[in-house]
Each structure stands twice: as structure tokens, then as C-alpha cells.
Length: 185
Image (tube, rainbow, N blue to C red; front, side, top):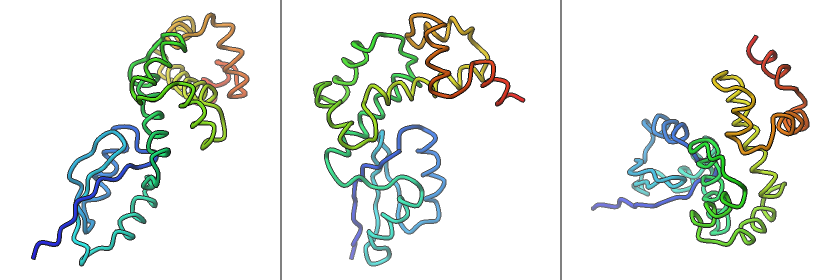
């Protein structure tokens, strides 16, 4: 008798190719199979007489990708994926208005509703989260040493190096030079 169940789970923190590769490596010796991976979702198959769903859930939680329990949380993850795409993959230098249009198109929800939902579940506003993500991208650009500070400011949609340097110092506690010296040495 074929008792195999197929389930699609939406996972938290499951945003990038690195996460997908980590899961594929980690699941190799498990009693369930990963059939497909889509953005923040994974399709699995398992035999409930061999492994219980609670064990599978615990596996994902320990890996840092807990299954999402509500439609709101699934939408929040979809939003985070779209932000990640904008900042880390597309290197989008458009204004926040165009970024908001992209986020609305990716989620199918108004920017106001996204912003409200984000604030409801996270400890910061959506706009603040975007700034934090941009700072993370800027850190990596500084360490890669591929662009001048003027180019970084332009690529990350800041009006000037001066504005960006003040923001960077405020967010990280370091000047560009201090940050670079601390992490390159």
C-alpha cells in the first residue's frame, strides 16, 4: 500500500540559493524527500508510518527555516524575498516609489497594506527594514572593493556620498574606512 503524502510548506528565512543548497545537503539522509523548491516553499514527500510530520517540522525549525503557520506570515516572507531580489540580486537603484511598485507587483497587495502587515509582525517599519537591507548590501560592496563610494551611493539610490556616509555611520557605528579596516585586516 502506497502511503506517501505530498505537502508544500512555506518556510521562514528561506530566501536565497544558499538556503536552497543548504536544505538539499541537509536533507540527504532524512526519512523524507524534497521534491521541489520554489522561492520560500518546499514540496516534500514522506511516508507517515516511517516519519511523523512533527519530526519534519522540527527538522526545518532546527535548520533555521520554520514552517509558516498563516497566510499573513507567508505574505511577509514573500515580501522579504522581493526586497532581497531588489537589493541583492537586481541592484535596483530606482526610487522608493518604484521599489514600492515592484513590491506591490510581486505580492499583489497595496504598499500601505504591506507596510501595515510588516509593522504588525516585525520590530520595525517596512521602510526601516529596507534601509537595513541596503546597509547590508553596502557593507558587502565596500568589502568587495569593486566600486568607489560615489558609485555605491548612486547604485544604492542615495543622493550623495555625504548623505550615505552619515547614514552608514549611524547604522553601523563605523565610517566607511573604519568598517573596511576592521573587516579586511
